Length: 247
Image 1 (cartoon, rainbow, N blue to C red):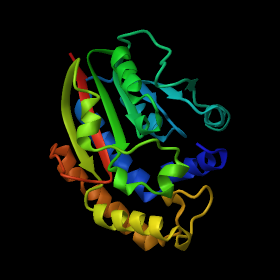
Image 2 (image 1 turned 120 degrees about the vertical axis):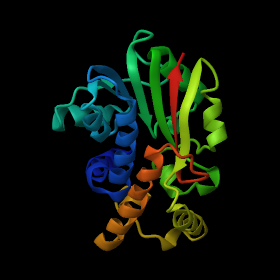
Image 3 (image 1 turned 90 degrees about the vertical axis):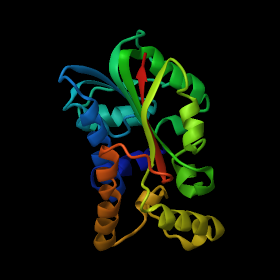
Image 4 (image 1 turned 60 degrees about the vertical axis):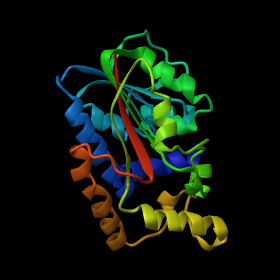
């Protein structure tokens, strides 16, 4: 993550319609998984800490972040404890955590097979791994370049990484209702990249937009939560989530 972007990211994680709706969706799934308030939770790729703050309601959270500057920001600005480390070499003993979260992390990793094996390794027996990733390579745009993505996934591609040592208990695409407008925008931005005005580091999150549209997009995206809480599997979307339970 570029240094300027992670500073923008702190505000975005707490105010942008995409992040706030996504956090509601993630928390709804976490709430269904929680059976005790004493869970040991590992949150990998915490960025500027919003998801760790959310997860702290459900147990003891250990936060891991790869980016050194981001770690320094969390320690100095938020007084948040964070371990600087890689998802491919997690500095923990095997069978340590009840719940392992990696929200939009695995797409940044070249050796994604090793990343998944590491999450499985540090997961307790009957523990859970919960991941989200961006979907469909044809949606690739400047947004992916700015965020240092290596790939986007189909559901089948990502599920294959979790095909042994446990069971996928729920998986689905999400950001389904906004798929068509987002896909059209991404394709347009690839054809005419200079026609799109972005601020700051240049991700889609920094696009100028009115409060009216932001509120509308939030409501549309957040409305999917009704379906996801009932564990419907949506046929396509901008992102993909997967919950896996260890044998």
